[in-house]
Length: 235
Image 1 (cartoon, rainbow, N blue to C red):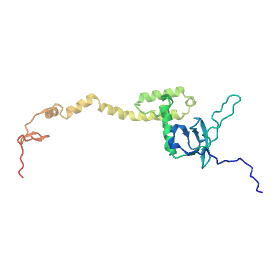
Image 2: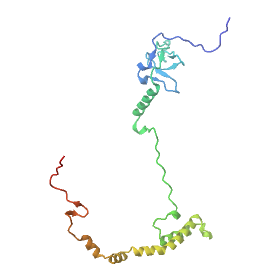
Image 3: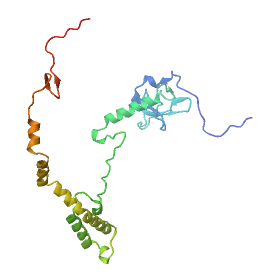
Image 4: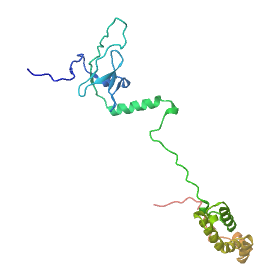
């Protein structure tokens, strides 16, 4: 006589109804998300129940109500063991449900699919690396102010920033004669002298002088006038 294997007894009984297709139900009445427990709202008692099975899916056996009065018994729901067929595109269903959930959320609780973070501002450049509008006086004042505040430079040796400020001061001091010469050449008096040297008023009079154009041209830059008579082309 064969021995029975111990374990849970699995039944193949159903409620003998036609299989329930998910395509005939409202999308919000079932949950078939991958990685989650499959569940469905029972069509008979309208309570959420688990869908059991791997290949053959059916609604888990349940009662009409979980709460009964004293002295009464639980009544099994006729929707128990109802066969279920997943005949929908799960990905499209999931995308539609996610969109409905986002639309139902308050606007202040919504989050974009992709988060954008404002980049942090870059740290300010040290004083030793700022070269804009550097003059001999500003370079000297910056260097002396650093010497007064820096503890490392007070020992007789420059720190990293102090050495850079000292090098910049020496460099600006060497370039100062060339800068002075360039400023003198661009001064208003120097410009006036250059203008008088090249003719000044003579050049301006030549530019403003009106001369008759030759060959009927309106201007030496515009070319001949546009003909006013109609032009006929003989074929």
